[in-house]
Image 1 (tube, one colour):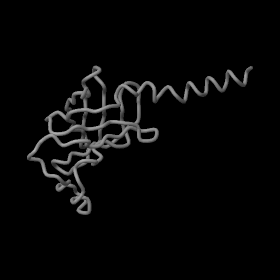
Image 2 (cartoon, rainbow, N blue to C red):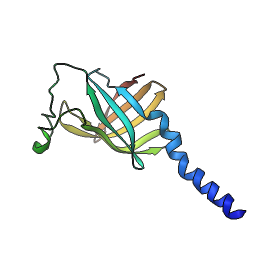
Image 3 (cartoon, rainbow, N blue to C red):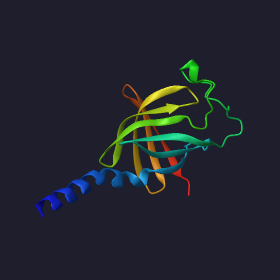
Image 4 (tube, one colour):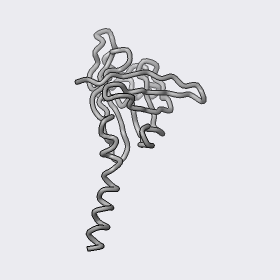
Length: 136
């Protein structure tokens, strides 16, 4: 009986972070309306990649990437959020990549409501937040 109780508690504890984080998962339109990013679990962390480019004037490839070897890769499929870990109601410790500048930023994500996601990128102590909208 005690073993069953222990296993049940262990299973619930293991499931809690993923269950609590689930509302942030989904498809989001970026602040400028240029792309749809799919946010999902990548192992125990969170990541997001460009699912669709909405701006017809945008380049087809990741031409501004600081890694010259990646400049020929398509924008669709480019990872723009990586390695975020849940910390209460905020996801921290990850990297946000901006394909327009080709730069990586220390990032933080926070679900404000069911349809608004605050995406913050920082360099040293200077931070900038953008607000993404959920795609229904």
